[in-house]
Image (tube, rainbow, N blue to C red; front, side):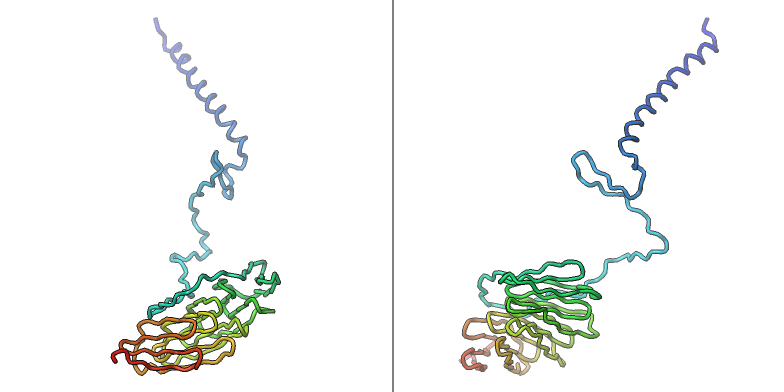
Amino acid sequence: MFSWSHSKQTLKLPVVIIGISVSIGLIPSLFANPDHYDGDIHYYDTVGQNRQRPQQRPHPDLHVPSVPVKQDITVFSNGPTDKTAYPYIQTTINFVEGHLSFKAFLSDSSEVSYSTRGEHIRYSKCFGDICMIVSQKNLLGVSNTSTEWEKGHIFGEERYQVAMGHKAALVASERKLYIYNSYTNHWDTISLEQESLRAFANLHEKVAIITTRRILVMDLPTEMQFEQNLLLRSISQFEMRDGFINFYAGSKLWMFRHQTEAFEEVDLMD
């Protein structure tokens, strides 16, 4: 006859076997990764891909913004249509960001360094023959004819738009235009009074600037500026060529000739 005491001893055997098997199964994993429970460890799977760590709650004393920080520098986009047929432009200058410094490598293999100690870099780019950097307090430009980074100062302005040509670069705020001239390695400043920037273009030695009030053409080697009042008209499109620049405003055309360095007004309705 089956007794109760015999049944209790019989039931203990599977429990002991299961407990021993679980303990033996845990031993290899504990020895394989002794830091398995360290919160700063990154775990890798069998093919070497980094697995995403679970999100941790921030320390109560740390301020973690709930929304991403808004960018204060944007790339400028022309309002009027740019019909210029730009040639293929090869970037012949480069820079490398090091520890608290930027090193520009020119086309003749020379190096030009700039210390960024105490500055926060907000924008940097190379294109054509120039490189430009915008920090919280300086504008910096370098070209293939430079011996040092040319510094331009900016004060009390938070938001900027930037545009790059292969010989000139633009930094525009609500109050001023800052233009880097690769021929002279110099920053030119143009004030904006009751007007705003609408277009910027650079082809070879000429820069074209269109605002809501006027047209500006700059000759880079001489730094000469030529101006045409728009007479309450609005430029719809423009085109830069080797010998002239056309600015279209409805039935009217303003043509800037490089040879005469003057604007000619043409009525397209005739």
